[in-house]
Figure 1 (tube, rainbow, N blue to C red):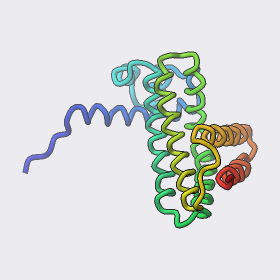
Figure 2: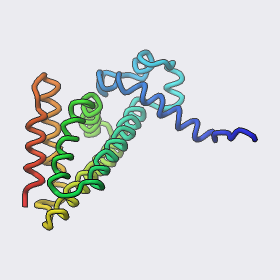
Figure 3: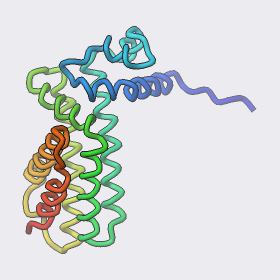
Length: 198
Protein backbone atom coordinates (compact mmCIF):
# COMPACT_ATOMS: atom_id res chain seq x y z
CA UNK A 1 0.00 0.00 0.00
CA UNK A 2 1.43 3.40 -0.99
CA UNK A 3 1.92 5.99 1.73
CA UNK A 4 -0.37 8.98 1.49
CA UNK A 5 1.42 12.25 0.82
CA UNK A 6 0.58 15.42 2.68
CA UNK A 7 -0.39 18.15 0.20
CA UNK A 8 2.10 21.07 0.11
CA UNK A 9 -0.53 23.52 1.38
CA UNK A 10 -1.12 21.34 4.46
CA UNK A 11 2.63 21.10 5.11
CA UNK A 12 2.96 24.87 4.80
CA UNK A 13 0.12 25.45 7.28
CA UNK A 14 1.48 22.82 9.68
CA UNK A 15 4.88 24.56 9.69
CA UNK A 16 3.20 27.95 10.31
CA UNK A 17 1.40 26.47 13.35
CA UNK A 18 4.66 24.97 14.57
CA UNK A 19 6.49 28.30 14.21
CA UNK A 20 3.66 30.18 15.92
CA UNK A 21 3.72 27.80 18.86
CA UNK A 22 7.49 28.25 19.18
CA UNK A 23 7.12 32.04 19.01
CA UNK A 24 4.41 32.36 21.65
CA UNK A 25 6.68 32.36 24.67
CA UNK A 26 8.88 35.15 23.31
CA UNK A 27 5.88 37.17 22.18
CA UNK A 28 4.12 36.70 25.51
CA UNK A 29 7.19 37.88 27.40
CA UNK A 30 8.20 40.80 25.19
CA UNK A 31 4.91 41.96 23.68
CA UNK A 32 4.33 43.46 20.26
CA UNK A 33 6.59 46.51 20.36
CA UNK A 34 9.68 44.81 21.81
CA UNK A 35 9.66 41.58 19.77
CA UNK A 36 11.21 41.50 16.30
CA UNK A 37 11.15 38.55 13.90
CA UNK A 38 14.90 38.22 14.45
CA UNK A 39 14.47 38.05 18.23
CA UNK A 40 11.58 35.59 17.90
CA UNK A 41 13.80 33.39 15.72
CA UNK A 42 16.69 33.60 18.22
CA UNK A 43 14.39 32.24 20.93
CA UNK A 44 13.10 29.37 18.80
CA UNK A 45 14.67 26.40 17.01
CA UNK A 46 14.24 28.19 13.67
CA UNK A 47 16.40 30.66 11.77
CA UNK A 48 15.29 34.20 10.99
CA UNK A 49 15.07 33.22 7.31
CA UNK A 50 12.72 30.33 8.03
CA UNK A 51 10.45 32.49 10.19
CA UNK A 52 10.43 35.21 7.52
CA UNK A 53 9.63 32.66 4.80
CA UNK A 54 6.44 31.60 6.56
CA UNK A 55 5.40 35.03 7.89
CA UNK A 56 5.81 38.26 5.93
CA UNK A 57 6.31 40.35 9.05
CA UNK A 58 5.87 40.54 12.80
CA UNK A 59 2.24 41.70 12.52
CA UNK A 60 1.31 38.60 10.50
CA UNK A 61 3.05 36.26 12.95
CA UNK A 62 1.52 37.82 16.05
CA UNK A 63 -1.94 37.93 14.53
CA UNK A 64 -1.60 34.28 13.54
CA UNK A 65 -0.53 33.31 17.06
CA UNK A 66 -3.39 35.15 18.73
CA UNK A 67 -5.97 33.76 16.27
CA UNK A 68 -4.69 30.23 16.86
CA UNK A 69 -4.89 30.61 20.63
CA UNK A 70 -8.28 32.31 20.65
CA UNK A 71 -9.74 29.60 18.37
CA UNK A 72 -8.71 27.01 20.99
CA UNK A 73 -10.06 29.22 23.77
CA UNK A 74 -13.51 29.39 22.14
CA UNK A 75 -13.86 25.61 22.11
CA UNK A 76 -13.14 25.46 25.85
CA UNK A 77 -16.25 27.52 26.62
CA UNK A 78 -18.39 25.85 23.95
CA UNK A 79 -17.89 22.52 25.73
CA UNK A 80 -19.20 24.08 28.95
CA UNK A 81 -22.24 25.53 27.16
CA UNK A 82 -23.08 22.18 25.57
CA UNK A 83 -22.67 20.02 28.67
CA UNK A 84 -24.04 22.15 31.55
CA UNK A 85 -27.21 20.66 33.01
CA UNK A 86 -28.62 23.89 34.44
CA UNK A 87 -27.96 27.62 34.70
CA UNK A 88 -26.11 27.37 38.01
CA UNK A 89 -23.70 24.71 36.73
CA UNK A 90 -23.08 26.73 33.57
CA UNK A 91 -22.33 29.89 35.55
CA UNK A 92 -20.00 28.14 38.00
CA UNK A 93 -18.04 26.26 35.35
CA UNK A 94 -17.75 29.34 33.14
CA UNK A 95 -16.50 31.49 36.02
CA UNK A 96 -14.00 28.78 37.02
CA UNK A 97 -12.74 28.49 33.42
CA UNK A 98 -12.23 32.27 33.23
CA UNK A 99 -10.14 32.22 36.40
CA UNK A 100 -8.13 29.24 35.20
CA UNK A 101 -7.28 30.83 31.86
CA UNK A 102 -6.41 34.25 33.29
CA UNK A 103 -3.85 32.51 35.52
CA UNK A 104 -2.52 29.74 33.27
CA UNK A 105 -2.51 31.65 29.99
CA UNK A 106 -1.63 35.14 31.24
CA UNK A 107 1.16 35.67 28.70
CA UNK A 108 -1.14 34.87 25.80
CA UNK A 109 -3.89 37.17 27.05
CA UNK A 110 -1.37 39.93 27.64
CA UNK A 111 -0.27 39.52 24.02
CA UNK A 112 -3.90 39.78 22.87
CA UNK A 113 -4.48 43.03 24.76
CA UNK A 114 -1.20 44.37 23.37
CA UNK A 115 -2.24 43.47 19.82
CA UNK A 116 -5.66 45.06 20.30
CA UNK A 117 -4.10 48.27 21.61
CA UNK A 118 -1.51 48.40 18.81
CA UNK A 119 -4.32 47.98 16.26
CA UNK A 120 -5.46 51.50 17.12
CA UNK A 121 -2.19 52.76 15.61
CA UNK A 122 -1.19 50.06 13.11
CA UNK A 123 -3.66 49.57 10.28
CA UNK A 124 -2.03 46.21 9.39
CA UNK A 125 -3.35 44.79 12.68
CA UNK A 126 -6.77 46.43 12.73
CA UNK A 127 -8.83 44.02 10.63
CA UNK A 128 -7.53 40.99 12.51
CA UNK A 129 -8.05 42.62 15.91
CA UNK A 130 -11.65 43.51 15.04
CA UNK A 131 -12.25 39.97 13.75
CA UNK A 132 -10.79 38.32 16.87
CA UNK A 133 -12.70 40.69 19.13
CA UNK A 134 -15.95 39.81 17.33
CA UNK A 135 -15.25 36.08 17.76
CA UNK A 136 -14.67 36.59 21.49
CA UNK A 137 -17.90 38.57 21.79
CA UNK A 138 -19.78 35.75 20.05
CA UNK A 139 -18.18 33.22 22.40
CA UNK A 140 -19.33 35.17 25.46
CA UNK A 141 -22.78 35.64 23.95
CA UNK A 142 -23.20 31.88 23.52
CA UNK A 143 -22.53 31.45 27.24
CA UNK A 144 -24.78 34.33 28.31
CA UNK A 145 -27.69 33.48 26.00
CA UNK A 146 -27.58 29.78 26.97
CA UNK A 147 -27.49 30.75 30.65
CA UNK A 148 -30.54 32.98 30.16
CA UNK A 149 -32.31 30.21 28.25
CA UNK A 150 -31.67 27.74 31.08
CA UNK A 151 -33.14 30.28 33.53
CA UNK A 152 -36.13 30.99 31.29
CA UNK A 153 -35.22 34.70 30.95
CA UNK A 154 -33.62 37.05 28.46
CA UNK A 155 -30.06 38.40 28.79
CA UNK A 156 -29.98 41.64 30.80
CA UNK A 157 -27.95 43.52 28.17
CA UNK A 158 -27.14 43.25 24.47
CA UNK A 159 -24.14 41.22 23.38
CA UNK A 160 -21.66 44.08 22.92
CA UNK A 161 -22.33 45.54 26.36
CA UNK A 162 -22.05 42.20 28.15
CA UNK A 163 -18.81 41.47 26.33
CA UNK A 164 -17.39 44.90 27.23
CA UNK A 165 -18.22 44.41 30.93
CA UNK A 166 -16.78 40.90 31.08
CA UNK A 167 -13.72 41.91 29.06
CA UNK A 168 -13.10 44.75 31.52
CA UNK A 169 -13.31 42.35 34.46
CA UNK A 170 -10.95 39.95 32.70
CA UNK A 171 -8.41 42.63 31.85
CA UNK A 172 -8.42 43.90 35.46
CA UNK A 173 -7.84 40.37 36.77
CA UNK A 174 -5.01 39.88 34.28
CA UNK A 175 -3.31 43.10 35.36
CA UNK A 176 -3.71 42.19 39.04
CA UNK A 177 -2.19 38.77 38.39
CA UNK A 178 0.73 40.25 36.48
CA UNK A 179 1.27 42.63 39.42
CA UNK A 180 1.47 39.75 41.88
CA UNK A 181 -2.04 40.10 43.31
CA UNK A 182 -4.86 37.56 43.05
CA UNK A 183 -7.48 38.94 40.69
CA UNK A 184 -9.16 35.58 40.21
CA UNK A 185 -11.66 35.93 43.04
CA UNK A 186 -12.90 39.30 41.75
CA UNK A 187 -13.13 37.96 38.21
CA UNK A 188 -15.11 34.92 39.35
CA UNK A 189 -17.48 37.01 41.49
CA UNK A 190 -17.94 39.58 38.73
CA UNK A 191 -18.71 36.92 36.09
CA UNK A 192 -21.29 35.27 38.37
CA UNK A 193 -22.90 38.65 39.14
CA UNK A 194 -23.04 39.55 35.48
CA UNK A 195 -24.72 36.27 34.57
CA UNK A 196 -27.21 36.68 37.42
CA UNK A 197 -28.47 40.07 36.16
CA UNK A 198 -32.03 40.06 34.90
